Length: 480
Image (cartoon, rainbow, N blue to C red):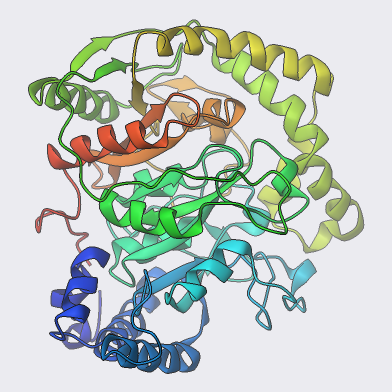
């Protein structure tokens, strides 16, 4: 329970970035006033949630004061994110600050460069007041480390907010900030978006710049998280585009609108199981509700199937991970294994493959073909984000069984339904809430667009949001 409820400032904490920007411009609210209220809220809730690993309050106050002056017409006027508080995933380095990635093996590491998206957020006037937790080396779908402890879900503190961008998910849901950063190599933006009841975007590969060497890994994506689709677009428009540090970063990103005219005439493929994934009953029901709401809004919604199996998806993914992320963490484990979390050691041990990297690429191509055929007919595919109703906070999920609907799926990451769209990395994916499970943890759907068609994915995601649940509804609040 929160001991100091008087400083929660609910009236400010859940305002959208779009509304905050309007109030700043109208001089109805000061960026300094907002920041102080959110800092009070963080300090009141952190004993229960533990999402913040680095407080940047003094620097943020200076930046908020500067933002206030810009709204008065000084220093060239307000920039796109002027004065808006942002929580940043600790994985994203900031010059002069810790860059531990939740690992005792990096406890003394201080960043010497800014991540491109950090650089762009600050250049656009965003105020990063807190940096937030992840699992060690971002290698899990939950969020705890021996270094930082257990991060808990504001909707039900017995559960995790998800991972690896779990600190961002928890912070957004708890009202710490309207905007946050995430990264996604197997679902790490979409999983916490679903379990925390917020929205997130896995951009298509190359859309948002990253840092070497993972900018060259097509499974890996950095992207925005927020509490509304409009705010998600606001942040994505700032961070997308080419960058000097990233050779694969794409030029001429699309400008995502803040509003859309609905989905009348859109063609939506509703795919419940992505082949043979079992589903928690609440996930099934809430996904069907999304499909029905889109149909009621004028979209053509057809239920479809895909000839995938979890085993084939996992085989293709392991071939990739064994060669890149698994190899990197295995090298750390070989030198510092005793310092690593149990789930990190298990990750390194499990990322082995019976097929070669080349054979894995062949399999990826084979698996994409039926999805590509769907895109010949449909504008988007809508499917669940998670198969399960959540992960228990603090559990390492090292030993099975890993049960979903009574079925052992073999690995905790396969309790999520995000991994296929890292294999098919050029597809933009927007994660949007779909409802609540019986345990009070949110569920969500993925709106998967055709390759590099970000705008259509956002258009349909905005319709899912408008016809369903989310922070636009004052009743959609975690019971903290």
